[in-house]
Image (cartoon, rainbow over all chains, first blue to last red; front, top):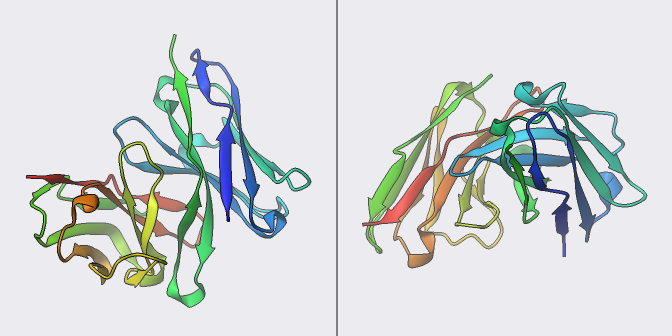
Length: 122
Length: 109
């Protein structure tokens, strides 16, 4: 069974930093791209970043580029998201997610963690 | 960047009714790059539809997706009590970025 378990959320002051982690199990970790998706309270989903299986390809949403850094450790089946220069608008539940690729038929985020809440407030 | 607009924002329905949810892209997109999710309060989203019209594993056949170009639709033929939730559409583009709509809430009338 695929499992994604996030941790590291909490309350942080504006301008502060936080490091989120996601530990995966139930699949061959070093074969898959992993993603972070966030959801502000009462709002829609927002894709944050992705990292390929060997960390060769890293992508960020434009609004987070330069402040957030994604990384992974394939020896520990974990992916991390370093959040710097945090703002009130970064307050959200941050989900770790994995895509299921159906080839020519499409793709989608099939596996999700339970999320970790980041609150940015003074 | 492609923007997805979902409407209506809220759909007030009764169990047993047919629900039609819309998602409009700011430019034409490939069907294979469109997906739909269901999200219940306090839970992570669940993939319902991928490739605009293909049901994910274990998704009941009362859920169906359709559309092409810029207009996509999620239809729930007969609403069950467990279907009252928020639904999100999503697009994946060739620059390896993912976009979501703002969501449609299906609530009990």
